[in-house]
Image 1 (cartoon, rainbow, N blue to C red):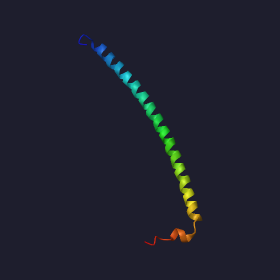
Image 2 (cartoon, rainbow, N blue to C red):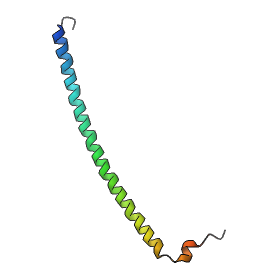
Image 3 (cartoon, rainbow, N blue to C red):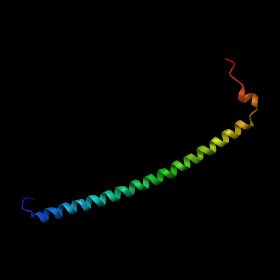
Image 4 (tube, rainbow, N blue to C red):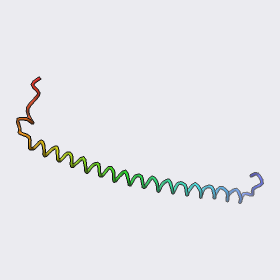
Amino acid sequence: MANQTPIDQIAERVERLLVRYAELQRTNALLTSQVETLTHERDGLKSRLNTARARVDALLERMPDTLVTQKDPT
């Protein structure tokens, strides 16, 4: 390494930077894909939660008022 000219040293560093840049691009693409997948999963879970909440609300609406407002006698 001590025998290298400054141009050779710069070229070697540029090559290493290019390899690192390519690695970072691949990592970024994978992370972007994971974020997209998790976002879709979250949206699906939110939708399911809202559906379940609406069903519970509908069931509560159907219950007689005396059962809904009745307190535990203890």
